[in-house]
Each structure stands twice: as C-alpha cells, then as structure tokens.
Length: 458
Image (tube, rainbow, N blue to C red; front, side, top):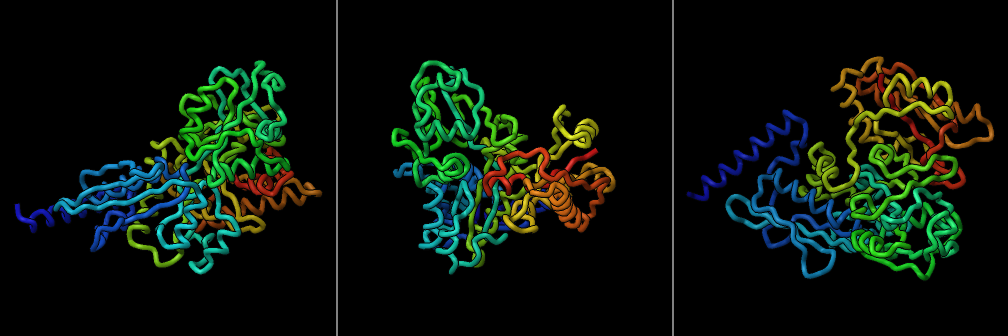
C-alpha cells in the first residue's frame, strides 16, 4: 500500500470523525481537526503537577484525545521515574506521537510553566496568589483562558473498613490530625491508637486539606503523620492498620472506608457524586489545568476543548472523579427546611450544578461561565427552556437578614440574566439569604461556598 493511500485514508477518517462530532456535539471540531506533529522527537503535550490529576485522569484524557485524532496503538506506560508516564501512539503511516505526564504535586506544575518545561500545570487546588505573581509575565493565570476546571473531586476522609465510626466534624478532624485526639475511644470508637496518614507538602491534596481543616482551626499537622506522594499509596496504607485515618481523592478510595463529614451547621455528608457535583459536600474541591493565557499550542488548545466535551467528561467519570454533566437529583423534603424550600423539594428536582462567584464580586467564576452553556443545553434538550425552572440564591450570614435575602436574590438574578441570553426563561426567582448553609460561615472559604445559586426544574 502506498504512503499516499495511507495518508488519504487517515484524512478521510479524521473527516468522518469530524462530521460525527459536529452531528452529536460530543467533541468540538477543533479537537477532531488533524493537529500538527513536531518535526523532531518531542512530546506534543507536557503536563506537570498534581498527582491527583496526573496519576490517572490526565493520561486517560490524553489517550482519548489521541483516539479522537485517529491515532493508533495508543498506550500509557510508566517511565523509569516514579509517578511519571508516557502516552504513546502512531499515525496510520507509522509515525510515533507521544505526550508526557509528571505527577509530583501541584506546586511542580506551576514551576513547569514558569521555567518552560511544561505546557499545562495540573492542580488539585486553585493557583495561589504568590504563584500567580510569579507567572505574571505569562498573563493573568486566573483568566478564563488560563484556568480550566476539568473535574470535581471530594476529599474523602478514609479509615480502616473495620472502624465503626461513621462521621466526624471538621473540628474533630482538625483535632485528630493535630495529634490532640490520640485514641478512637475519644470519638466513640474502639480503644485503638490513632495513626495519621497525610499527603506530602508538594501536594495540592495536602494544601486543600490544610486550608479546609487544619488552618481554619488554627492547627498544624502532627509530626507523627506519615506522608505520601501518592493518593493510592496512602489509601492502601490506611487499609493495613485498624487505627489509621487519612485523606485522599475519590478515585483512590480503594478498599478504605469513607466517613461522612459535617462543617458548621451542615448535616454530615458522605462524598456522594450528587453532593460533590454541586460542591455541597464540605470537602469537595475542583481539579484544574492551568495553561498560558496566550500562545497555547494547537495540542494544548485541543486537549482543553476535548476535556470540556461530553466525551472528555465521560472519561472524567470513568476515572473515578465527578464529571461536570448536568443531571437531576431528587432532594427529599426535610422538617427543618424553610416552608418554601420544602414545597420546592416536593414538586421539583434539583440540577447537579451550583453557580458560584468570584470571591468578593458579583461576577460568575470560570466554572460557572462554562456551566451556563451546559445548563442551557440541558434545559433545551429536555424542553424546559421556558417556564419550567427556578433559580434559588443563597448567601452567607449578614447582620441584617433582609440584606442577606436581597443579596442572595441578586445573585439568582445575575444567573437569570446570563441564561436568558441563551434562551432560558424562569418560572420563579427567589433569594433565601443565609438559610441552609453548606459550609461554616466562620471562614472566607465557607462564606464563598455558601454564596451560590441552585437551579431546579419542574
């Protein structure tokens, strides 16, 4: 077979995939269009950073992009360096193509962008102010072009499967990991010494736990804690000791037991998909990729768009994380709910999306900007664009409850304005002030989480 015929068949396959993608709207056209290959033996993508993202999710998404490109013999293999992988493939004419993922912790990803040896930084927490300042020469790393929310994860608090304890508060967690609670009997459990397991200091998983649990209570991690670079290694270690407790991403639960967690006045919540998707679960978090705001390579751009496609989000789901699909969930009315909310819960279903805002502003955050299109597509597909949905705004505690209710309704009206541009018209708009908090209002991060807009459909 001549090389010319092989190339033509490759182009025909790409065109066929392109037409299918346009028809099904599952993969953007720029993903399916044939991407340029480097002239030398260099990777088409280099991802550095979070082990949570890089251990499994990022390689699976690269493999998915390679397949969407019509590449063959797609393989993911570990390199000689621990926590590093190479994803390889071939074009139909036999030319090798590969990408690399180095998963040594969130902080290493931003170093890769700064020093030029990474195309994308994988992060299991938002970029810090100091990191943003160090990368200012690249542009605004919090812009919609740079910051990409690729999945939602819950920080699972894990114990040995035989541990009878079912739930903890964030305050109890802080005391445990600070070494102040040393025996499980202090929490109604067995007479067993507590053994602490934590991610290492380079990990975004550690940063998230420290921010949401320890630092909020003014505590520091006990020196007795065993530290790990990998979520999987930590989870395995917890299953080997009946007194163990640790924290990990959802995809690394393994055989460990997850506990329900309460924060402030919220009810204890397990890291269930619906609660993580709406980010109501107290230890839910976003998983990110950060790209240079400008000058991105075609492969970087295609990878980002592939991740946001329905096909990419299916891979997110397959990897064990929570995809950003829009779905409905039935929320049972509870006696402690306000009367209006009880009526809403009995008559309507809630979508698995909460709209949230940039801290200190009325501007929707980067995830919410993408969610506007996802929600509009869902309403359109289910015939609920006009008069079949409700927006319910919430806020943090204010000295004046009337002001809190007004601000929460203004948030809902902000979402209504944006969705009306996409053809959606709502049955009702309501603001519930500081009712039904999902996090403690004692800290800034909790207040930001409580400032949200829910969407319900009838």
